[in-house]
Length: 308
Image 1 (cartoon, rainbow, N blue to C red):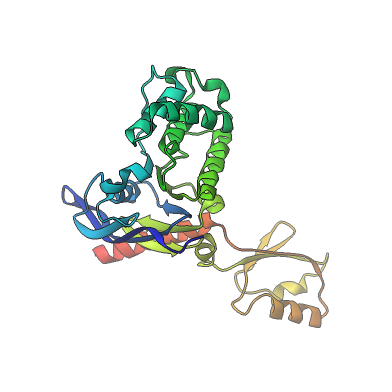
Image 2: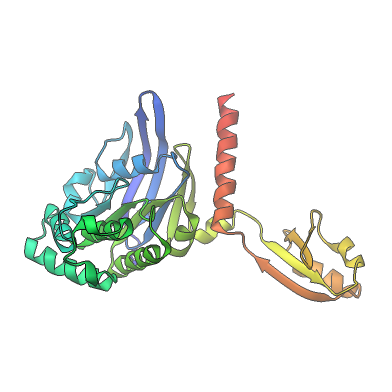
């Protein structure tokens, strides 16, 4: 994987009618990676993506996309799935894909050939000659996604691509995204659904209230919270509870608690040294969802404090 950057943004700012939608957002997207832009609804994700694509210009800040300061200069190398979906309903699926490719400079014949191949690979071979109006919402959305990548872009930007998809089509989309990354493309996608980000992202940024709150890997984000443990004592061993860390709470057949900073080993040594046994022990890192909620709540608290 190359260490060059497909996108670099510094201090992006955008105001709408006196309201600041994006407030000094930075972003560095390594080439050849899947990069997530995470945030609650209204966080500024779509506005940020549109500035990176050159659809709108920032009021302040700089952006570099595929080595160019003018994103529109490299539009033929970029694929884009906007948050607002839309295809010509009378067009056949294969032709809709070819049409989107033609907008990026791909020949009609090549677009139709690739469109049929891509539909087949995505499990939609039966829909090649069906009109868009005959397709389900999820299938039409996948057709539009295939159209955004038919010209084999170096950069694929997807705004809330999983919105409205059923679990089967969500899995198909995840497979398509990984396939584009494996081909060598860079994928930048926004979402507020943590499951997709946790499974897909090489790196991610979290935006809340229009401001950048976190950047790093999924594991970096999860590491912002301490690990949790579930301890099951031997039957009848009530005295062991006195050794558990403060805040330990009864849960099912045992106790849940936050793993101390020094780790779990000193606690286990004390337990065994005092004759207590262990019927079960599991330790897990909090999920990306847990980390996201904590970071967003902390951002909201900071914003309220600043507004006072």
